[in-house]
Image 1 (cartoon, rainbow, N blue to C red):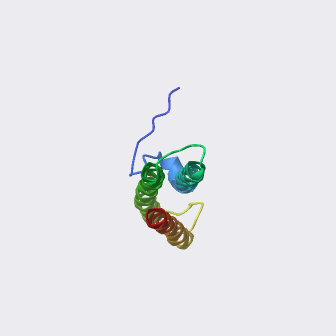
Image 2: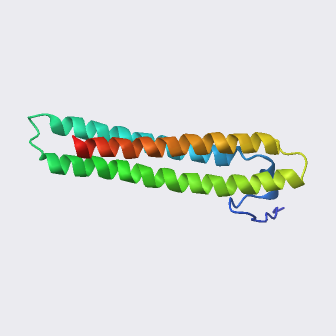
Image 3: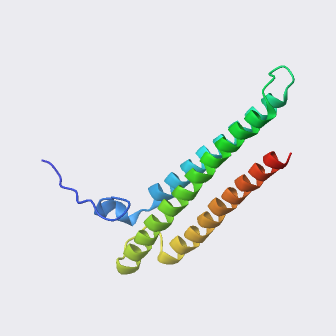
Length: 135
């Protein structure tokens, strides 16, 4: 027998999944990990390009490194926006319904924490880009 699921909200979750916002939190964390890998890739490329054996021009080196960081910043900003809108939906759902895994207070605290971490990471990426341009 087939079960029918209704897609609701920005996260497109079934009603049973609205009690547990953990997948939304994990999606943000996974995207932040991707951003960190891009920044590490940028630093690795920059360090390898500084090696005298590679003979990569400094302007090309800086351009590629900053491009990696810029992509990481875009992903971080978008994932922060996506997380914020999705978690707001979960907060509203949990305020109206009982039986949620997290209380609305816990969700608001987690929202503030994760938004702070994501925005701090974005700021650090822009700072690293500035250092690459300056040096």
